[in-house]
Image 1 (cartoon, rainbow, N blue to C red):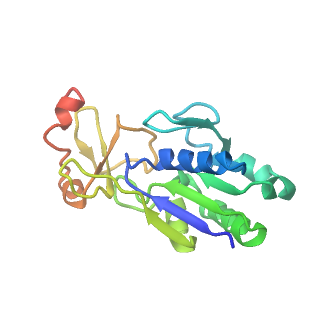
Image 2: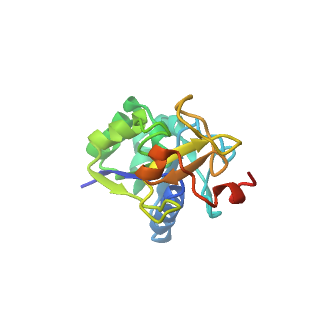
Length: 196
């Protein structure tokens, strides 16, 4: 029986690396795993999923997934969605359809909340509709679990306002524990690491 999984974590928790390793595990066993991401995510180049540790693999965009026929979809052992926070509720409902009607397991990887602490629409829908929720953990600079995403500017100031979606990586975001996210404290070594 197929299930819908949402594996969420803060920035830097290796969500994309986990997605790419899951794809590799399926394909190593001779099963086709379809790697998908929203077209909005353009950081890694055209049709590519790239992790911070250097793992890469071609992927398709979500709108291309929806264009596949039932026959093409049922040849897949699973669908793996990276950057799932950027999905709409309607797109998450399409994933529910793949699971419930076509019996295809779907594994989604993404952020739970934005830099303000608000849920992304895709994450909210997945938190409600997923069969299984799993946190992909990482640590704050203090050693506590990092569960929050801080967006910072070029001077190293934590931002509290702005557009929900602003693509970036280690150059714009850092995972923090709740205490340091609330305080806007990027840590004593942050400025040295970022040349500030």
